[in-house]
Length: 160
Image (cartoon, rainbow, N blue to C red; front, side, top):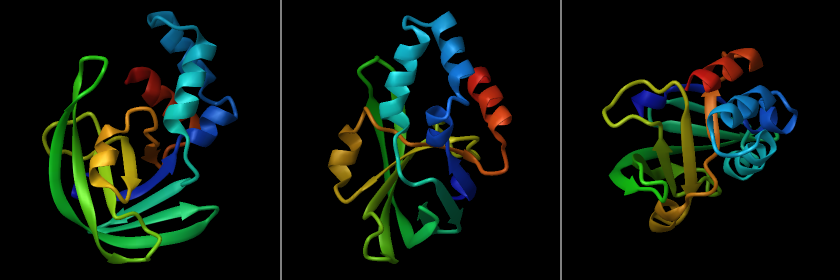
């Protein structure tokens, strides 16, 4: 889990409050949808109630409404997936070894990288069914370092 060590914030609140509107406008300039259509798409994609995640060693702490949920995770391999859009991606999978009962049994990271390397952001899938998570393609909560402010996240997203 060394690629994802750190303190991470969800971008979903920024989508909801309009902070990411310039990102949606940029996507519209270069894509096949209008800005409001991109925003609707990301509303589903980014949706989460986990506003913050801390990762240290093999321990992941999820924060919902400021309340922590903590567990230790061990590697459970990776899967190479082919998405509907035709692109491929890797999901790095971890299984809960111990921790809070409510913590998910599985977490899967997707960070747009194939080889191990520190992530600048990632999409995280979590739940209790490993196979079902691999099928998830519409909701991909996204996290950026908590050290970044809103303007820096907008800049990073436009550059991505």
